[in-house]
Image (cartoon, rainbow, N blue to C red; front, side):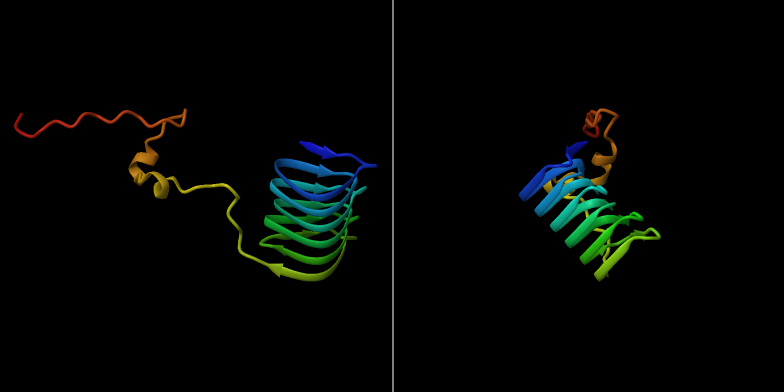
Length: 143
């Protein structure tokens, strides 16, 4: 997990993947391919986009969760909120526009069938190492 500690100010655009926890002050936009925690000591001003967002602190701006957005009891959020699934704990303060959206696909995934021309049978024949099993040799009829 990547942590931006308390008493740290980040200004700008952040792009990351995996798990990210912000304890400090954040001004700008964050694009996370994964899990974002805006902790109880964090003040976030700007846009946050991630697969899952958990808010414990203060947010002013836009939150976009591709899968789920959770507001803990001490969350104080004002702005535009978009997510297919939203959980709001008792005590959380949420002000602004709320949009329920269909789940979004994760960033960076590619449909291998479209790229390699593979068919479903070939893709389903992958073994535990992710490699394709060798195909049996085709024999000519009447040989």
